[in-house]
Image (cartoon, rainbow, N blue to C red; front, side, top):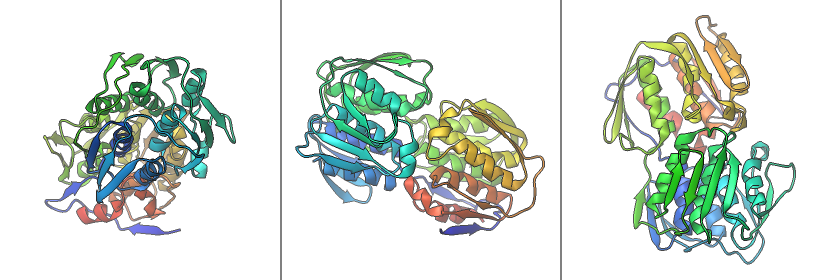
Length: 425
């Protein structure tokens, strides 16, 4: 396994700017919606990563005519409706949840027989709430190994009801997946969400994008949604904005070590993770958000206890920040961390303990008190989890570190460590 050693960073290079990669969530959703739309769409600034590669490969195998015009630009001739595949097809989606979940829903109501599989970790990530909601409505889905988990065998069929209900507790991607097929169903979709919905901003993101493709949706907060059977109509072009979750590492770096400008997203972002800037402000950070960039300055940071249910990915960045705050950092209502690319709560407990800090955790929280620590050089494991690797890079402002398997960042941010080293010294 490869590893990268990062010498202790003293600050941010004067005048440093970072262009964050495009949003993974928006990229994969846009690729799917453009494929199911009427008309041709040119998607610009599409993320180039493992997850989007898996989605592109799957769409090609499903018969979508698409052309990768240049790096990050894809021209898609929409199908004008659901998939129709004459022969059984197996799709390997790696560990791309943003491909597995929406494709599962779309294929369940398409024509054909499909097997969805991926890497070992994907087989441990639940999909049961989504598949059971679809099965109750008449979808034919079979678990090939363990109930409620991939791999799946799907025989496309029409649903016998357009009224579905699903728990909001495990993953907002399940709700997004169902909403995205709504315009393509003969009677549309009425979706009831049981319980409080986690990661609400990601559902807002999905609805905003669906509306760009002509969908009509009415809602009662986050508990009921009604999607009209409009189909999708491609816009001529659509540009994917920068990834707010990826920006969180550089917002934190600027707050820790010096002035930094982050390009690629701004005030009009549809991503809820941009609100991470507000969390940093509560901790004492100096941040300004403009139309097309974010500027962060070195600040004296205070500890915080905060519910991060709405932005679980960006919330991870708070864990290493505890090394630079006066007082502990406690992050609550993050049970979804347990079913991500790895069990992120357990992983952070393991890695932060290597620094000699006090770490407490439970089913849905983690707390880090770094008032005491050792001086050891840590060799961080990353669990094949891109966000673990990027978060742990922030420890380099405290000491020399070694990060194992740094290439796992290719899932969403290829070249992350080169950029991190370029803008820090």
